Length: 277
Image (cartoon, rainbow, N blue to C red; front, side, top):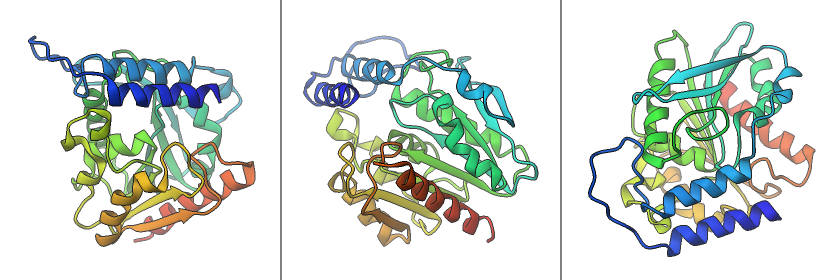
């Protein structure tokens, strides 16, 4: 409950805080959702995410620490889970109150089934350098996808969790730089948080969305089905597979490990199906 309270406070501040316009030279990490509201919101979310815990990694095999240098020189830190014979890669973008190391044990399921997994701390989070800013993080993911696509993988998949779906759709949603995507519990809009409408995720669904799965949790109190309705409507009209989980809450907050496991297996089966085309 304390984490949920902080999240709600962050959202309220995003909605109510005035936008400040400051004349200055272009800054790659410049806020686009308000010069005050955006840094404060990310600070609240970083506080929720906590500090890295490498003990999560030490217990896992087949995990490598990796780094990626962004276009402005900021170094992003993360992990690769290496499959024995990869059928493709999955780039994971986590929720706004998560660190990469916190998901490693869950992502092992995908590695065991033949996918190389890449996950990074957002800039300013965990072990990554820089300031957490929406536009900069989106640019980071566009560059990471471009980099991974030079590595010779046959299939190129992306998996966005909550705000991670916002980042990935903005980064590559309307491009041909990925083969399939899972967008799990991402809102239709972020303009109601003070961000420009051009960043609304629903605007970045490709015309052919037949290789996208959108998941909405009926029990989700963070990103409700109503907040996802327009994303789902547009995606469905463009051929996306929409799964409404009656027992699902927000990702990684499901009521039991069994429900959480069924969610992960739903995602895995979608990627396995997409890897056979």
